[in-house]
Length: 166
Image (cartoon, rainbow, N blue to C red; front, side, top):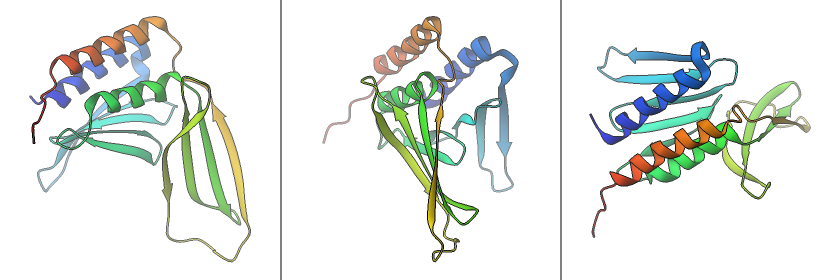
């Protein structure tokens, strides 16, 4: 099992402990041989998935891919922890009644919001006036015990980091 898959399993156990039946695990297996593990926190939109190559996490359509050959695992875990324990600001952009873009920002330690990702579609009525709807979402979990256990997962990840030399 690869390091990111072990991390995913540790996160799944942590979710089962803290979110109980709201932590929903599924396994997707497809005709082309691709498979992934997917973990969702019911009624929050937050999810994380793991395949052979990477961790992917997000909320709704907004998400980030972390491939450990190119991306820093600790950065991934820090971002995911912030998504769970900090407020999120979601800005939906509309043309008429059609939401064509969503920007998600996550609160940083100093209380400012930092962009996490933006998702959009190609189809929209470009001639219509753009309107915005901003929603502030509360943290998913506010638990010192959860924070400490998540920190243990990050410590595990740091102990098993392979440093590549050029």
